[in-house]
Length: 218
Ligand code: C5P
Image (cartoon, rainbow, N blue to C red; front, top):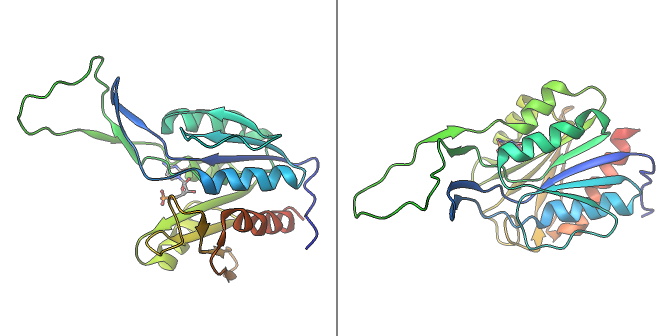
């Protein structure tokens, strides 16, 4: 198929798993590799969009032509995305954002003493939900990585976060989700339409997503 043209469009993608520090050497993290988000940034750039990639720590190289903004925590990601939001046409939130962060961060390395420990956690802002409340003309895309009840949870998320397209994937399937080179996804739309894709490389998923984005931008 012809590559869709997104010339003159401004896109932002978030990728990777945020890290929430406990002390100077430890953090709470998750298994996201960043590959899905990096593939989407590459596909958007190749389609002609001016593309910003707000990435949590990952070893992946920045796709050529993409502007990278490196962040560590959910709060840093929140600020980086909100700073750009008004200027954007498209936002794809592929990052695995920590839902909670430690209530406090120790200034020095926490020492062991053999006793049980409890970490108090406080909720992080839901960046995507906030964009959903603020959006004017932006096309907003969310992800739902689930381990059960995939379509029901994804449907609920699409409505609650006010997105134009939700990419749902069952991360327990072999060949899908965190760390994998491939993914098995469904696209859900607010009008009830759904597209189920077979197992594909993350770059192929990204290209299918860019085709839908071009359609949604009209
Ligand atoms: O609610 P859940 O975390 O499953 O929603 C996933 C979607 O919401 C993803 O697109 C993710 O990037 C986004 N999200 C976010 N901020 C959070 C949690 C999730 O933007 N604090």
